[in-house]
Image (cartoon, rainbow, N blue to C red; front, side):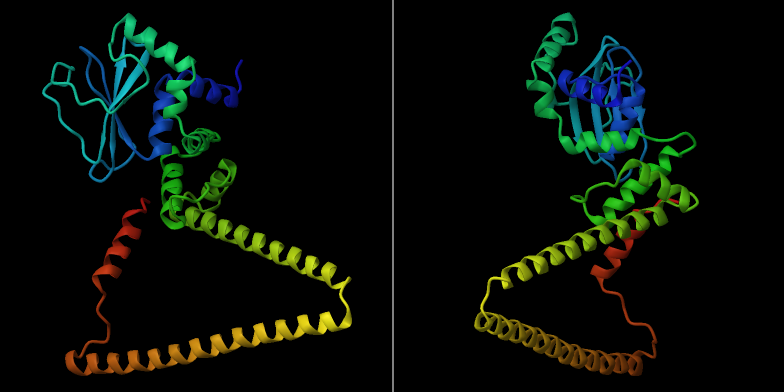
Amino acid sequence: DESFEEYVARMRSDGEWAGNEEVQAASVALRINITIHQLEMPTLEVVNFPSDHIRVAHLSYHNEDHYNSVRSLQKEFVPIESRRGKGDALPSVGSWGGEGGGEDGRRGEKEEGRGGKGGEEEWKREDEVKMMASTSMSDGVDEDKLADVVQCFFELAGEDASLPDPSIVEDALLSSGGNPHEAAYFLFNLSASAATSSRDESSQKQGARQKKAEKGMSKKEKKKMERRLQARNKWAEDDEDAAGKRGGKGGKARQEKGGEREAEGGREESEVSDTEAAAILKAVSAVRI
């Protein structure tokens, strides 16, 4: 028997992928579709996302044993002359090892991968975390909806955000009644709350350090610090007042402009700018119910 952590470590060391389960996990974790090419065999396509706006990774598969290279990675599928692998080869982008499909190519690939060089260069820690999250699913959890939750979460939080624990992702999906959009919003708010708690904890620690420092101060030094804090707070209040006045003027100007627009065109709704329209379309297209 082999634990999941040991399995991931072995894959990282060997630089090899196994069967359909791993290919599906890679597709979901990296948010790409995958096309697998094998000599004298039909082309296989792993499609987990709408093919009109998602990247496609083309893999070459040799001797029913291992994947040799990523032939191409692009936004749209590149058709080949034959569905059975007799067309022109796609340009090589990266490889785990030997370029050949025979025994020599397979041996060279495995030796390089087990040596640590091939696998370590191609494998990224963030991909490992995403793959573990995408494969650690409970029974009865819809894999496609879970992938939608992950995709929508990154749309909301940004590509650099950290994905929550897989069990939390599953709980969010189940609690939302299977709605990926609601689950993603729950995870996003959860991450924001965690960040706020972290800042509050940091402020508390800073206050404790300040009290500790005050113990060794004289009365004169304490009064000096109090004056500095009062001045700093006053500056902050002045900045807020100034911002409020600017906002009030801006709001008044917007109201006047809105009145002019209604008088001229008789319309109650303001026009949506191109930038706002693009943002709305992006948010809507990221959600699949």
